[in-house]
Image (tube, rainbow, N blue to C red; front, side, top):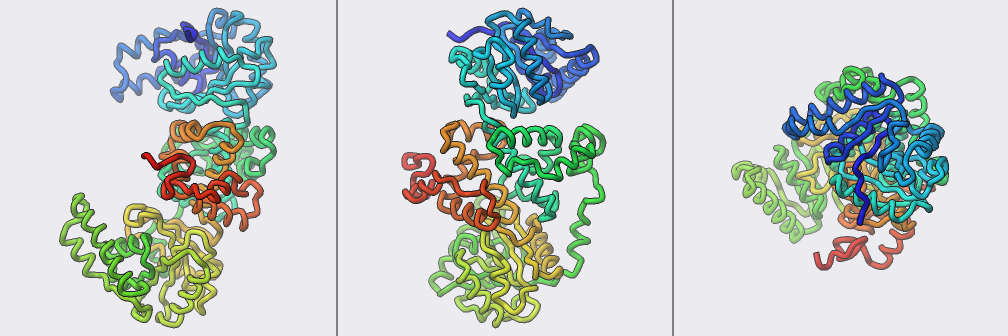
Length: 596
């Protein structure tokens, strides 16, 4: 039988500590809430009452239940008040010496069978536990912010934590309505180890002026379905907190350079630019603590002003290719009112593409998202062709052929001969260097990348990829076209992975390495990222959907270009691809899909 916890203690009543108090009190557990001074105690009380009052206002908590909840909490100054609790959770700032001092005092104050837990997100639970005479009763219980809302709890056992303590805490998490993942004591645990490498990479991308803060954040929200962009998330977490977590992970986790805090991060913390809590971080906020972003000197000019800056008029568009991406792009341009010439390698392929576009448009009509007249008008704007010469008078060409550089270069050399001067030539490549394609022509200033995401009619993002030879006029034209299509265009340089893949795939690769090291299971890692970080899919779910072979190819390209040791493809990923386990399309990847 699992142990029954009738009274728990919480040390530290900041945002996280007050949230943990609320979680326990909501679930009928009496709580002794402890702070270091009367002023700090009052701030914690205000935080808790504010949270519960908001829940009442939103209809998520009855007034009587709020009153009962608050009645279960005993606010006290000093650790001596914890002498009779069954479990203590510490939620003070992430400083090892501070936590060790508190645990040494808790060891003295608490009854012999009390469990001592830390909510640390990055420090060693083992190093904290050795400050006590009962390390076998010390465990990590890592809640996520906001604790009353987030479902995940990472239960962190050390090499000496007793099995009974682990089982009792797991049962307690279930009582609290939380999903727990039990793991061993390693830097960053699951969620932070995967999240902060990605966040740090995004800071480095911004620091290098590869893309704007707005475009980096929009790319990850719209391209990956994440709840927040990485730089906005850093502001929410707090740049000082993020720095401490990264620095701890770097020192404890084998000194992986990707966890070494970006220099810009240290500079911003030193300058007091800590994110929302200070009113300014990567963005500027209405006031300290406010979530409302206000314009500052880095806010981009309005879209209208930018698009007026030399954009060429585009009326007729040629689209080359016959695959899924080409089909989707044809539909996007035709629905947006452009005259479209679809060019494939033969009449049979043209007929298939035509049928695919019709089928997709008909689905839109059936679902009530497209009027029949609009469907017919869109189809009426498309001319089907099997010869590139029909592109002689278009204003824009979008290439969506196979991802082989030799094929694309040959195509662009032909377009260079056929198309009139001033035509924008765009490639939809997701991984190849756009400059290599551009230099196959005599007009590299007119060549740009337009990386649509699949399915193109649905996905709102387009990465606009400038080479060092792309003209400002061509870039402005690409931005104007994306806006006319109803897409969000994000501008970046011609570097492997662009924004989305460069940030996404190293994170996925890190997850594979974590599994390979037997640190956790694929299910628990997926749970951690979905429930702890709000990701729409866990990394292994996503890898199986994308295809392990595709993922490996992208990771290899990133590694070859950036030469970052941490980007080397995980051997497990290479082995699975070699074995033919490619994900859903082959019936098996990280999971077996044959019976699903």
